[in-house]
Image 1 (cartoon, rainbow, N blue to C red):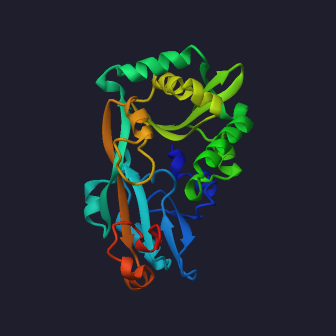
Image 2 (tube, rainbow, N blue to C red; image 1 turned 45 degrees about the vertical axis):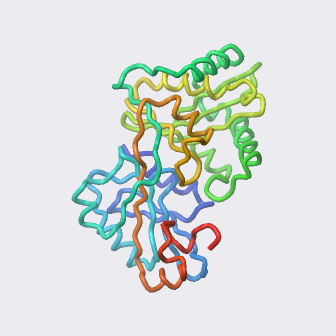
Length: 296
């Protein structure tokens, strides 16, 4: 069965990021974007992860993208979906650690919350009702909830998902949604995408009332309990690409995890002269592609 993130249906829901291109050697899609010069394109993997099959041919996929005239490609990979070592060694790509993901691995034993999370989970459970729900049954309320998050944090770019993305999620196999209700009003929800024993945090949001009662604590606790067929629950990392142990989101996710694992940036320049021309003085930047670095 194809991983949900590798399906055409999913890639097409990310049209606000780019137009999908199937890469048969990788068993999935990349998204094509206009470069700043406006006459060329580059590629990025789907949000939040690129799924590379165990038999993927990285080098052949890169050759396909190069032949298509793309300037560069960048993918985010996680530990569970890294290609074989031989495939990495044979491909002209750079792979480097990106940021830590916070995981609950069931084989390490039951979760043991620290004092703060124990208190917050118990407090929330006394104020809301947590349940697993079908996203399609609460799609309108979920869209409104996520819309509040977009406004609150002024989200743009990748995280400014179109309605179609939420609608596709509501029909995709492997999508599981955990929610909190206060007087039958949806106040918090967390969507996971599951496949072959792995659950990946996809999107989460809470209303002002949800924040007030700490509903997300009870939602995550409920998810850990009821994702019992998943050996790993990946809560993702902190916001942005920088590690910040003091970030509130990191502390929140860390409290539900019992281990960490790195995510990786996998990148390749496909047209060196054009890449250097677009990047100008930022060509040595750690940000990839350099011509898209903030402030460029």
